[in-house]
Length: 233
Image (cartoon, rainbow, N blue to C red; front, side, top):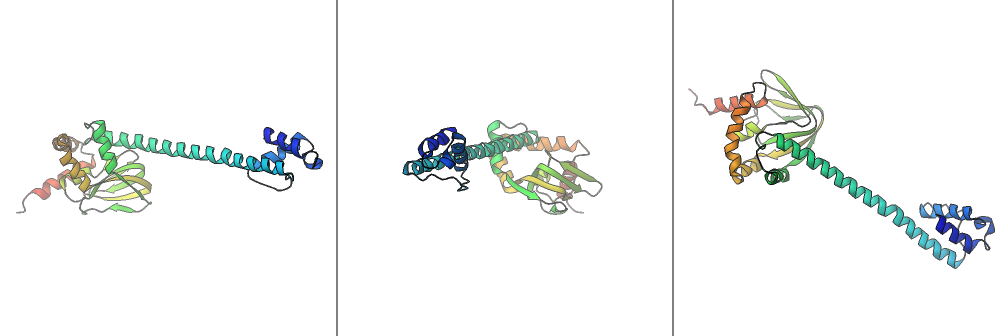
């Protein structure tokens, strides 16, 4: 502002003493031009003044556009980094995946897709085939089981046991508020088990461990899977 204001003062002061008679008047023109506002109340009339004006406008674009682009890009990268950390932490806490290496967890992350559900929206219904497991990144859902209601919120997960045993859902899941979920589809889940040998053996062990917690949603799903696997008599 000081540089371009002083230049126009030196170029235009003899031609337009009422508009460029002082450096502060030149600085007013400079700040308006650099800000790309262009009020038009003070404009150069000499060829050299117009040339400097063009250069000033270009500099104004660079001063505004480049920092905005840099900040936006950095902000987007920071959001991605935060989402990565949050997702990584969630996957690392899932008993089925807790023993996996960093590379294997990264493979799982690439299989996830995001989904947003609104308050009151039903995600799955009791009796539906298990098609996915879910990770709650933000929000809250209520799971209506035959004997109880369970509420899950940020950082929790559900549906992996029914997915594992290829059984039906043991409860109806409804969003109590707007929620953002990460979804791992059944096809990707089973392909992952086949691709990671250590995971397949760990799955059965983990399922039994989770069954020991009677308050866990997995208990109901495993119990249902056990009954459905018995012959009817």
